[in-house]
Amino acid sequence: MLTAATDAVNAQTNQSKTGSSQETFLYTTSSLLDLMTWDATTNMDLINQPLLMITCSKADTKYMTDEAFPKAINAKNKKLFVIDGATHIQTYWKPEYVSQAVNKLLDFYQTNLYD
Image 1 (cartoon, rainbow, N blue to C red):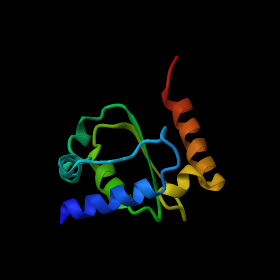
Image 2: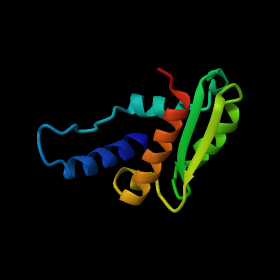
Image 3: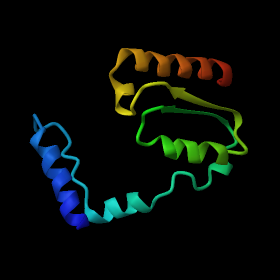
Image 4: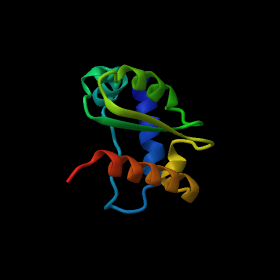
């Protein structure tokens, strides 16, 4: 079943491919299994630098940020920024969401990066 799902995603991706210079995004079953078992929250307690996590109120992946953020117990100046009304992918192209993310990043970098 996993192979069938992977093949369906690959077929859909290849249908939208417009040129040979684009990546095909073909994933092997083994790399998909590795991704499915990887836990981004593992070792969050090892972060000892300033941390900014950005998520969106309508992001399918928001639950991951909500789970990871509290586990970063040693991060300095830890911030969580939620872009209200946005989905994850909209932050890449909708100007009102892109500007919110960029402005938060600029503020965070100005506060936490030193010469």
